[in-house]
Image (tube, rainbow, N blue to C red; front, side):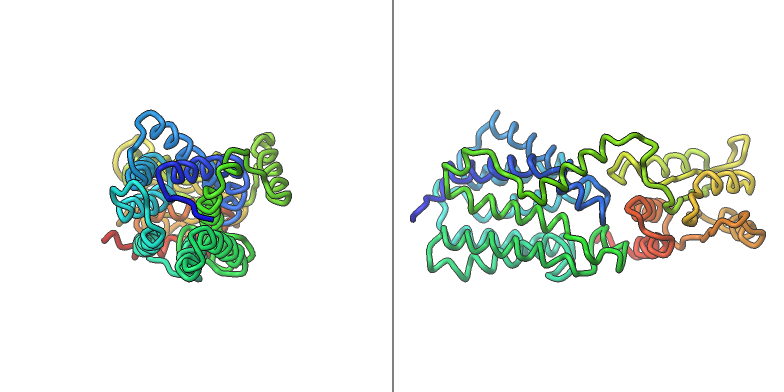
Length: 374
């Protein structure tokens, strides 16, 4: 069967991808709740839905322009790492497809390969790291290998390879992304990014069947059950929220800096139920300095029985906490995190909110200390 890779094909692809992501958003979020920040499905649902509305309002004229427009929209609107990563996939594919009204199958293969290479550079990731690359790289390789059999067979092979790659992430220990903060605790969970990537590649194959794309996507029974459970949990009363997580305390010379850093970290966690984060900034009268009494109160407020990681900005903040550690905190396990104040607070709270123990939180904070921005 021959299928033209024209604008209609790529419109079907994006429409199918959007409908599948909307249908499976709770399932993706449930996967992310286990090893991430519990927002993957919600973020992708919001991004793809709004992208569909944007391109419907101003329809691009070529396949390349369509993918580029959606990629730019995802980068600008999707929170967390999903925005830049999925935006990169589609923008890079759009660039390789160029301005041709009908895409050659070989060009689509180059576009897939270029997209994977860009994601690997952006995330500094490779196959086996338990990321979306574990689905995308096998898909690109399978497409190229099967292309002599025709574009439909190649896309089918890519979709199957992507799904197999996503499933193969279950026994892996994450080496990149927020799941890596959990260390060995990430083993036994399917990577949400690899799962959504497999859905995207599968939608590309399903776009070869206009009749299928016109029908509503069906959830797999197991996935539907997980999604239903996730939805039920999201509606559970507030008192059912998980307890016993590591607490975070932020000790700064400035009341405003401590409070705003705590709020930033909570906002970036991406879930409505972050681990406790208590600021201890400035002196009791609001002036600049550090107060042992405020630190004690913050530790008591953040302690849920799983330990407390304390982040200090500098100088007397560190000395004050060290002096208090020598006295003890009434049985609470308290440790100072050797990490930059803002980046450490964010990575620490994300890890604690995902259920990481005190060692995992401190390890994540230590990783933030060496995080390169270039």
